[in-house]
Each structure stands twice: as C-alpha cells, then as structure tokens.
Image 1: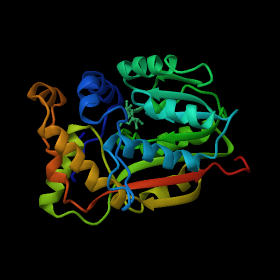
Image 2 (image 1 turned 90 degrees about the horizontal axis):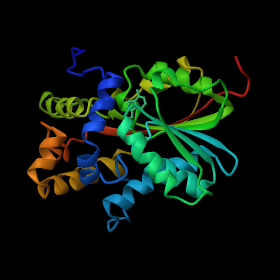
Image 3 (image 1 turned 60 degrees about the vertical axis):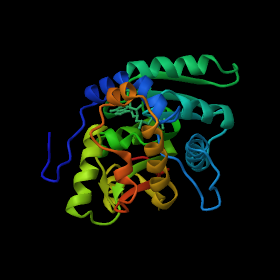
Image 4 (image 1 turned 90 degrees about the vertical axis):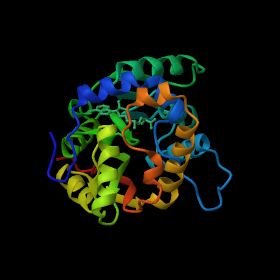
Length: 277
Ligand SMILES: C[S@@+](CC[C@H](N)C(=O)[O-])C[C@H]1O[C@@H](n2cnc3c(N)ncnc32)[C@H](O)[C@@H]1O
C-alpha cells in the first residue's frame, strides 16, 4: 500500500521473497552483515566489513547477556550478527527471518562454528512470533524494524516473549531533519527498492510506551553510520558487474544518498518492566 508521503507498507512474504532473490548479490554489495557500518571519527581506516561488525558489537554491549542467556535475533539475515553474538557472549541465540534462503545460510554458518557456539535460525514472521511468553532474556532487531508493516505489533510480540526485565535493542531508519522534496524523492526510491519505511524522530517513545516497554536509551548514530555506509556502497556498486547490480533491482543509487543529512539512523534500547501486567 502506498501512503501520501510516498512510503509503501512492506508485506512480510514479499520481503522474504526479495531477500531470497538477492541473497548472493546482497553478499557482494553489503558483505555478510546486512546492515550499516559504524565508524568513530578516529576509525578512518576501518573497512566496511569491520565497521558493520562494530555496529553488531555496539548493540551487543547493550543487551546485558552472557553464558546461559537466551537471545532472540529478529530479522537475522544470513546469521552473521547472531553467530557473532553467540560466539562472543556465550548466549544461546535463536534467530528468525522471513527469507527461507537466509535461514538456510544462517544455519549452515552456525553449523560451521565450534559446538560451544549455540545459534539456530528459523523462518518466521516477527508480527506473530512462534515462541511462548517470557521465553527469552533479551532480543535484538538489527535493521529489521525497517521492514515491519506495523512496528507497534512487533514490539508487543517482543515484549510478550521477553521475561520481565528483558531488553530489546534495535536500530531503525528515521527522518532526522525534514527532507526537502528533492531529497524525499531520493529517499523514497531507496525505501521502495528495499521494501522498508522510516520513522519520525519522536515515534519510538510513543511506540515503546504503547507496547508496554520502559524506555532506556535512544541515540542518533547517523553521524557514525550513514554517510560512510553510502560511500562504501557507492564504491562497491561502481565496481560491480552489471548482472549483480541488475539482480538487486535498485532504481536508487547509493551515491545519491551520501549527502542527504535528513536520513538518519537510530539506536534504541528498552526493557520489559519487572512488574508484569
Ligand atoms: C536489513 S536485513 C538485516 C539482517 C541482519 N539483522 C543483519 O544485520 O545482517 C533485514 C532482515 O529482516 C528480516 N525481516 C524483514 N521482515 C521481517 C519479518 N516480518 N519477520 C522476520 N524477519 C523479517 C529480513 O528477512 C532480513 O533478514
């Protein structure tokens, strides 16, 4: 469905088919992590792949998990972040994605690790999580909320499957400053290409409260993520064989996003309150 602002509501089955279709070309463009990189000003030498792992670690620090914890990874991609978190934290990770192909690759990656690394992946829709109440200690949604048709519904589902005191740590795209009509057209094309939407800067406080979460932290990490990620993607796209590029089906060009400062990237942390209700 196309809205007045040009945004299109993603349909989970279609998002899954999109990721199935681009699984190989996305690996060439994005690498093994399907998310933005994170660079501090002092990290000028960090490669895109290192910077995407850095973003995973930034979220992991906030999850407060360790050996014996159970983590739900919502929108697990090809398993790179989930396996990394399992390996480095000792937590037991259950990941879900709507893409069957991604889940196959994620489970193959998990099997290639030592038996001390406990991670498994399933095809499932975050709008209806197939898990019992209070069955996880924490949840992470690394750049998957962007694809959800209803963020409020997903947050309610996450709250349900978290134990009291459990944390959700997520990232999302947001409109950081009002976009000019020309910039909005470029951003909307990108959002349509990858079947996602972005939020307004104050949406999360309302969404979290309505889902019964206690707000903990919200950081705008656009400065550390957006510009350099689009520079890296533009650089890769410029050297990519045309058949790989055409498989991705992008009408947008990452180079056009580099100077759009109104497109932002948010890190959000919330907790299911201890008192249940
Ligand atoms: C941008 S990728 C991020 C993947 C992974 N978190 C990473 O950082 O590498 C978005 C992921 O969200 C998943 N996803 C999108 N909509 C979903 C839904 N409704 N339920 C579960 N997963 C979903 C996609 O299949 C994909 O794995």
